[in-house]
Image: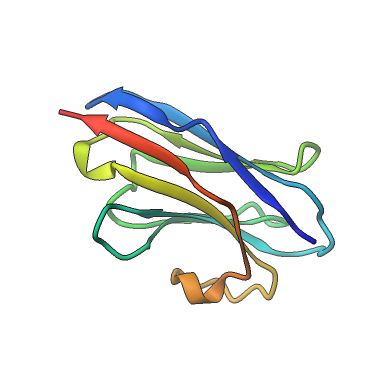
Length: 124
C-alpha cells in the first residue's frame, strides 16, 4: 500500500516562505508524476504544481509561477514544494498526490494516491 506523508505546513506572514515535504513510503512504480494540490475552506481542491519523477520536468498553476518551486529527491523518495512570497490567498490544506499512470493532468481525478494534507495559513 502506497502512503504519502506531508509535513512543513504552518502559520506564516504574507511575504514569508515555507517548504513542504512529502515522503512516499513505498514506491512500486517506476515512472509517475507527483503533484501538489491545495484546498481552501469552502473551495474545491486545486492544482498547484507537479513533477515527472523520472524526467524531473515541473509544471505549475499560473497563480504560483515564479513563487513556488517543486523538486524531488530520488534517494529519499521525497518531493518538496518551496513556497516563497506567500500571499493570504495561498492559505489552505496542501496535499501531495501520485499519478502512477502518467496522465500528466492537473485535476484531482488524474491522481491515484493522496496524503492527509498539511495546513498552511498566511496572515496579512
